[in-house]
Image 1 (cartoon, rainbow, N blue to C red):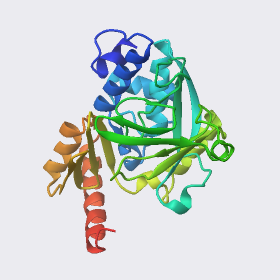
Image 2: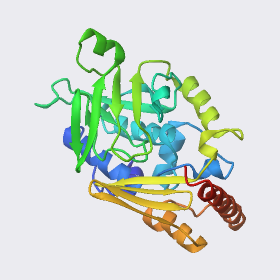
Image 3: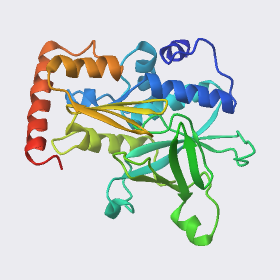
Length: 291
């Protein structure tokens, strides 16, 4: 645990209270980037929380949501927090909002009430890539973190019955300008077997969504920092800075230096193949009008 805390810049053991939760969450999303590099290299890491926590502690890449939130759950539990899981369905198009596929692992930290959140349930999430620096209270409404507004709504059944949002089901409205549109959180199947099946669907085979384009992201306070393919972007509440990475050196530097992505295990041949694949995909995207 000490090595994990050191990786995210914490020299002491945070207390298992709301201040400690915020401190761990903010440090994690700022220093451990969300990424799919292992999948793009055709060697995806297993969706195992202990293995993910080990990579975090040893300075390696952690991965995407199943890895990131599995590792964060491991750490928070050992720090004394009460953590439970939920089924998350991320959607990008309105017609997909009512889908039921498991494509995001959601964490709820309970037992931490304050005046604005008397129920004491908080949504901790290190696996959105672009997301919130601090946990969101599971209270219906808009919640502002570092200038960004994130929306929590009632679950579909709860909304129809007029009940407030609770820890079992809710809807989420993402930040303006983000890639994803929202998330529907429920208590559908989200155990280890369900996560493993979803992980395989997301990372294995030619049609797997996480094999399409290299992505690395981290939440640096108000700045949402991203490399997607050959596009480097910094999104803040004040605006968007975006440019193409036109050289191999600039691309590598953006990944390692700005996104803090560990790359020591990537061979020269792997870099060359990934660069060629990424430039070809970028060229095709550019020729298609960047849809």
